[in-house]
Length: 199
Image 1 (cartoon, one colour):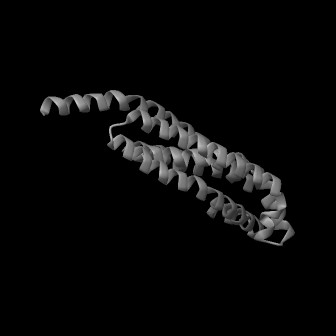
Image 2 (cartoon, helix red, strand yellow; image 1 turned 90 degrees about the horizontal axis):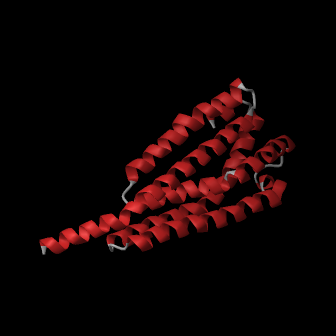
Image 3 (cartoon, helix red, strand yellow; image 1 turned 135 degrees about the horizontal axis):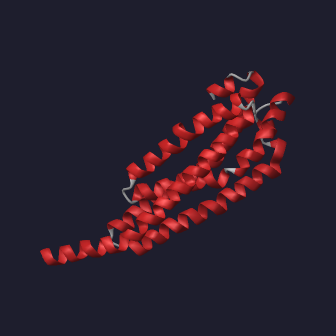
């Protein structure tokens, strides 16, 4: 937003308009993320790693379906969405140029949010946070500056940086989930054996 503010009033207004739209769509995966955290945590606490892994996969699948539908809605509604926030033709034109980019990263935005929720439920909070730090402050911010000001892409440069950062974080979080969830079953088996021997 600070970078967009350097581009002028019209650009910052368009930036805020599209941010409002994707803030609304983000509420859907945010809700799924909270449910996934609770479900995976409960199942692992009940020593049921198979169902916990399945719950993680189903949460991600549900997110892909929901966010694909929302991305399609963004594209189909076109100028009617930014028209809810502004009647300025310059702001609308700038916002419309950003909507295809925003629609394009909806699935990645949803997946990264839900994958982080799954990892929180599994107690993997530090890796999830570390991946977020890598993807957003370390990649997205400098890339946004480079695309926007060095390559002179203007406001779309910020949004392409969003796209790339979200894609990277989604890939890393899902990869980490796939790696750690393979260990849940043998880990639970060892815990059960240790409890049996102690009793």
